[in-house]
Amino acid sequence: MPFPIRALLQILLLRDNGCLNDEQWASVLSLQSHESEFQEEAGERWNTIKLMSNAVKGYSGTDIGIPTIQGLFCRLFVNSFSLVTPGLDSIGTAFDPKPSQINHSCEPNAFIVFDGPSITIRSLHEIKKDEEIFIRDLFEKSELEKRVFALEDSKDKKKLSSAETLSFYQGALREIRNIRPPWPPNRQPLPIIHDTIALEHLLEGRWSLALAHYLVIYFHIDPRSNPEPFHPERVVHSWRLAKLFAQISSLAASKPEEVQMLDPYSLKYPAILLGFLTEVDSNVDRSHGSNSRFARTVRVRVAEVGIIKGHDAFQRWGITKVHMEEEWRKLRKIADELAQ
Image 1 (cartoon, rainbow, N blue to C red):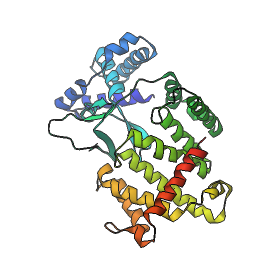
Image 2 (spheres, helix red, strand yellow):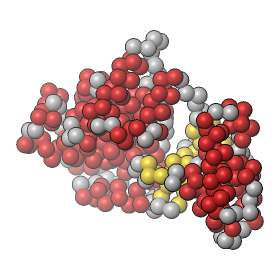
Image 3 (tube, rainbow, N blue to C red):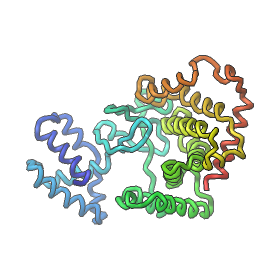
């Protein structure tokens, strides 16, 4: 059964069985539906909404009429969130009327973080009393973006082999690099392209190539998309790099071919690992909350490597600011040279 049908059936069952009170039901109906826009398009999506509405009406036995069910489907499509882990891995879809009322902006002042069954709105800077809260805007997609996201959203992606997926996204990356004027580094679909290519390399054990694309996100995308160092996405991406460097450094002694690609850069793995962990540790309380599952996970790992809050771990390990700047120059070079 398609997800939208299952989701709406759950909502209707909660309502029909008295699990949603009148106030909660009114909050669902108060959400924007953009139903007239769906109708004006008169395309496949609106036809799908009508078919699903008939199916839900017949299957649920609800006393709610078809027009209302159609409007509920529109609200579901417009107001749902991608349900993610604290590490921002997508695991489903969430629908909650309260956070759904938050407007979007190209200059957001807040970010939604999931922590188990809880939704938290994390501020990206000071929000004054009576100031409106905004989350990230949804931009109009270019034709190239539509092609990439069409594959992302389709079932066909699951049928592709790793090599086929890699070929598609590498082709999209080459196409973007030939666009003039240059495509902004932080504009979609570049972030999702680099993320997907890195993941495919990671799944095949190509650690160095995965690292290169994750470093592109770290150096060229995140600072532009998320200028706040404590932005949840930036903190999660630094955490991902810390874990990847821990894996690569554990393999460095045995010199597998994938790690040998990094030999010309003469990386100081302990210093780099310490750098990323310290970066995450100093920002995680503000990005996810000090009592969040993610913050607790970070603190366990930080304690394992001997980082103590309020103490200069770099000085204790004999690592200077000059050393770190040199390592970060090497990492930027890896991003520029290997992420092809």
